[in-house]
Length: 254
Figure 1 (cartoon, rainbow, N blue to C red):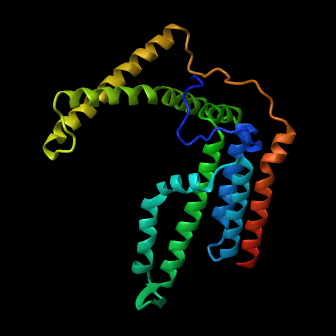
Figure 2 (figure 1 turned 135 degrees about the horizontal axis):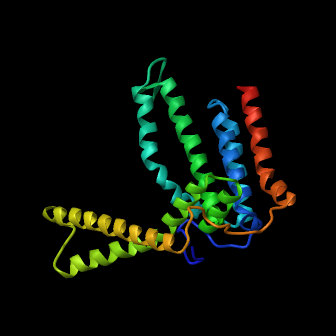
Figure 3 (figure 1 turned 45 degrees about the vertical axis):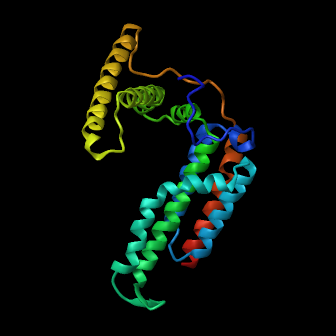
């Protein structure tokens, strides 16, 4: 997997967060999300503390808040689900601006919104500071199943190839008079998707045969031999210690 294959969520930089080994950041993000999940939904102030903690990481990593805000819109479909809960929940009920709302529904909506948003923000922070190749290296060092690492590596390697193929097919259709804006041409678009699947499948078969002919045994070679030091773990897990303290506060005061 070449160095040129980067994902659109990566924000290049040389901050201390960028320089941390990927496995440290993966573990830190996972444990941070666990702390958010176990926090009672009634601990409103604690969730504000999580947001301040993330903001501190953004400041150290030099990630603009606007960059994070735009990409966090990916959770919009879940926001729609949360908005419906206050109207469909059970009693007791509260009145707000003349509208009757379910109190358990309000708490449920808040729980989905705040925990989902913090999870998305944490994932975006990890993606913004870690290239895809480093994420795979981190998974490999964390002893993730080799098959998972292999599938992810090949998928990321060929997603650009498939995207380029789809772009060329679209340009070819447009040059022959195809206009995807018209509803009656949806059939041609569907046939194009089917053709793309067949081509991708055949390409995958050819690549697999080529790998077998070159001695492929099913395991990815080690992508990096760099050593992660204790200092890396101490620095990377420092936000987790703060998050764990916040979670403990929420559990005690709930």
